[in-house]
Length: 379
Image (cartoon, rainbow, N blue to C red; front, side, top):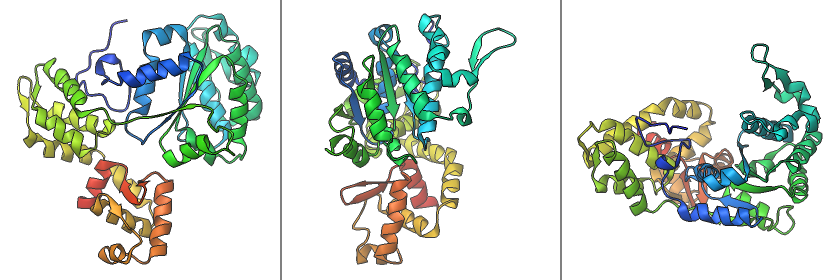
């Protein structure tokens, strides 16, 4: 199949191909080794650093595509076992749909609770999956059927579950134990549990009383080294008759601590600002940053409009600090005219819960660099 040639090679928020993906060769090799040796993997690192991209890149390797069926589900927005089952079932069918295999034909035979969503297109006669979330009446039964179906596959499977820590927030209280039991009994699939809430993920996999205790191999993800990313970005510019000063790439990487999504957003905009045959210089960085922030401004306004006043004030204080320390101290409270230590604590608790703020030891910062910059200067 002919590879898509993109006008702007700095991809944000999705995986296209190896050509537009930067490095991660050691991490890809590590994943391959663990999976091929029958080990599940817990991939734990902050959001926006490239976990999903790495998994998609790993899935795109020719040997992996040939040897396995691969499935990727993002459960960040799910709130119940029924939603989990729905998301997993739809992903399995979506991956099987283009294939003409006996395994595909068995889908609705084995997963009988999904038959209500099985329909034939009146024009083409092709089967379609038209299941609604409300059709999942007995999620545990459907989950049993999905795992039974996986065991019938004509080659092994790899199932990646992104933002896996979300299951700890489900309305049902036994989901961790339930899934652990199903996964333990599943001999035909390996799992990648990816998560960004490090303290929650660590608790799930490193606490003896937890069902998933030490079941997977843990793997962290660090930023792509600046020299590696500089070579990657320079190549993408040069291949399209554009140029960029090395110092520009290094400055952007440093500004956003090497977090892939933010660096890519800036490089995407810098590439767009650079005319063909010309060179991207440091003078263009501020304009690119303004453009990126303004393109997201409405979402920032919407977020702020939905926050309680106390959370807004604390959030703005953290934004102005960049990295805030001792936020319940008298000095911090006086500096930003906050109410009290207890009100700051309660506000931060909710900001952490909603993934707006991150905490490392005694340091707090807004995880979205662009939102933080907008908030510190515009709000």
